[in-house]
Image 1 (cartoon, rainbow, N blue to C red):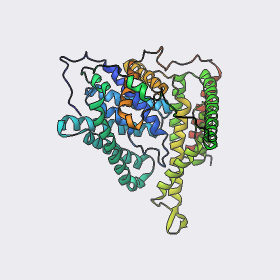
Image 2: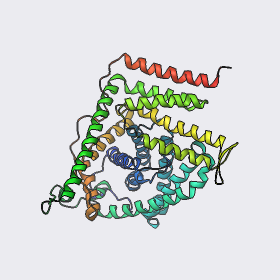
Image 3: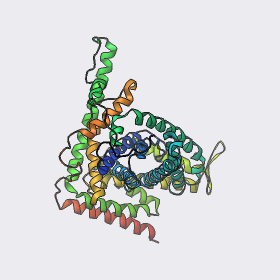
Image 4: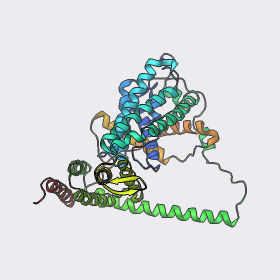
Length: 436
């Protein structure tokens, strides 16, 4: 990575808040991609969402660098509905530790440490912190068994991201502008239009039955997806019309605390079902298959360390009562907190102050990214990625921040919120003081 440039003779200083918001939006986008990758344990991340933070090491001073890390965690928690979950805790800890380690490595190593080195130490530090958290919150002593695999994964992804960053910073017009260098002549987005598929010659008519059948199946899949999105959108609109985002978030916080400290497994299962139904009603995308896979992964990891009476022996692998119960309880807690967060954290929630305005601006940039029509190709990947950055940054600022709350109909929403809170707290009290 090049060293920070001097301002003299360069382009005018940039708005650091705006640059932070732009990089934060790309963190959201990459986090969303990573979130969709199936995994047996939910905290096992590839770390691709840290790429904008790696690029920012030489672009932002420490204060704004840390703001970017916080914007990434808060914004992605709002988008995915995971603000009240262990995922947010893992993301916050891993991101902040990785950011600080990368910053220190860059500032102390200077030119002696490459982008690959900065990326690898950040990835390893992030994964190490998440393994420690997994030990105490999710899978217990089994965390030490997965630690070598998790750290090796950080080494591989850190190396790949570092290689990408090294190539990108020396070829990118956007990076040159963001670092205060003079922009090369020529329109930055011309190459994008040529490479993005805007002019996509077919090269002849495709008439075979196989191609036609494949296109028909694809069309049907797209239609089914569009229908599902429309139904979820209708549910979300009705849901948001009932609840004020701030009050709903406060409800979620109270329910999370009551659920987290519920000692009875049976009552926790009942509350889990209630929160699952609320998440479905909210219009958020819910994957029961992913819930089952993640839950089985957490339970299996807990079974690796036998505790208590043996209830089943599978060819030498002993399933013990306490380990099984602990795994089920941790799986319910993990997924239940996720559903609470999905049901109560809405995009319309507003954050106050300058930090809130940066998050809101990041959502504007995020909307531009997901609406972007260009598709990077392998042959021109770096040029296409650069053009995407420039196109998103230079597009006219749309009206609104993307986080405005819809009009709310008072009445029934407050009644429902109060009812859910009362049920959650009542279940907590019943769990601590069961009838004799």
